[in-house]
Length: 69
Image 1 (tube, helix red, strand yellow):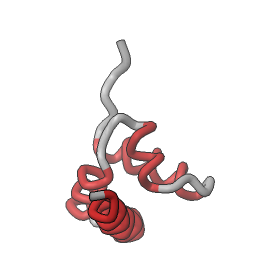
Image 2 (image 1 turned 120 degrees about the vertical axis):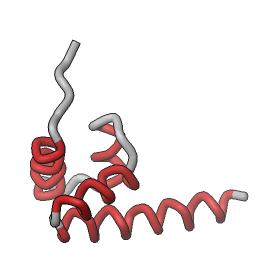
Image 3 (image 1 turned 45 degrees about the vertical axis):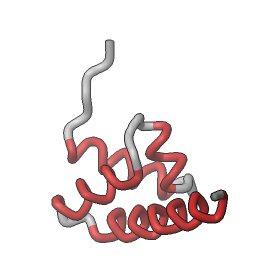
Image 4 (image 1 turned 120 degrees about the horizontal axis):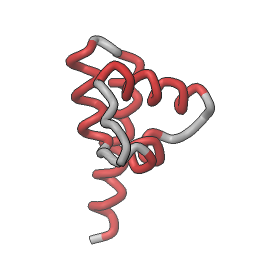
């Protein structure tokens, strides 16, 4: 069993993975969460760079899913 990350720890991990060039959608999947959940946590924590990256990714994902219909 693994311990859950605090919001601060999660966002630190997200930033580290983003710095390594990982796409927000892949980061969310790797961390067992959603792009929307990460965006909301980033917004509430004042992490605007993370928030913007995940907001953009969320919009792209919605657009991609609509195109599949």
